[in-house]
Length: 97
Image (tube, rainbow, N blue to C red; front, top):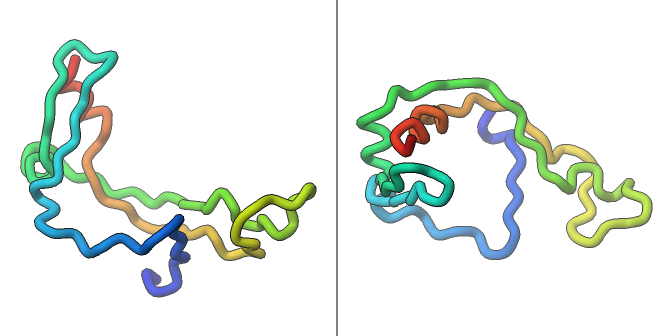
């Protein structure tokens, strides 16, 4: 359940999103057709996909590392399996071919 999923932030807890449909990402670099697209456009132009996947904090079990590692000394529990929904990165990158 969502309420049992682990929470880990480096630094301050982010503020609540203000108008996330306007968030924009730039696809450029090693592509033929660089472009910008908003979260709203991603949601309207691409078919969403849902999959189950595990997300694990890199420090899960850190308290048992030898030699000891810096940072929050997690024991266990920094992993969770959830359903994630979004668009396929491969589909988005096809726009930049």
